[in-house]
Length: 301
Image 1: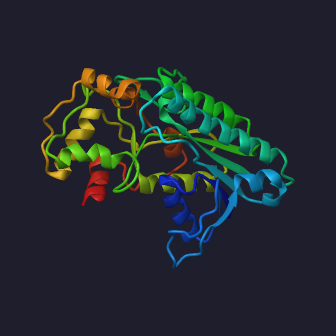
Image 2 (image 1 turned 30 degrees about the horizontal axis):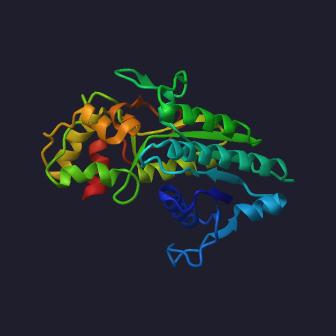
């Protein structure tokens, strides 16, 4: 399979690139600037690089690729000032719009486009569990951003479009998990707020595997919840993390304090969703780490 990967130098993108190359796929990474050297496994073929400007100048140069994976987006792990929120939103919408414009000008467009999205567009849940058939009810800035992101992805004229609604991707390094783990390493872990908010999570290995599954399975299209099949709350996540790390889960962080320190960004940890990957399960996808304790033991061992 020949793949164009947008966002291939990021946290998930690097792991996905390694998996694609390991199975013999040809990978072209779309980036702002071509790197002078790569950090990929020297025993594997290296990905090739093309800039956004080169793609825009001659979209048909990249005709004939089997698929596009778009993981592009400014990190949400920063204080949400007005300018930061604009960058977060624009980076996602503009990347999808660019891809749509370039694909329209391709003589042989890709058969499938897998576009990243977010689980927060469902809104905030208590005991309710969301699947792909649940209504879209954004309740905050990030949820509203994801709605606009998916609308931009819908403008990509692909034969098959998959929108990955991604939760917290857990890995030993990279992403948000090392920050979540830090208080436990310092013996200061505990629930955040009331601890009842859902915390949709997935192991990085399963995240990569399900992207490959979506690329390979022609029956899958539309929204796909990219989360593990065993939903947990923030308090449950912390208790399991404390157990596997052999650290106490005892020091609650008041929601009022987080709102004071983080401002609007506090919604990332004070609200959440319980979600199920119904579409993946219905199509036979097998999770390597369906349960939180198994996943965290693998990451923290």
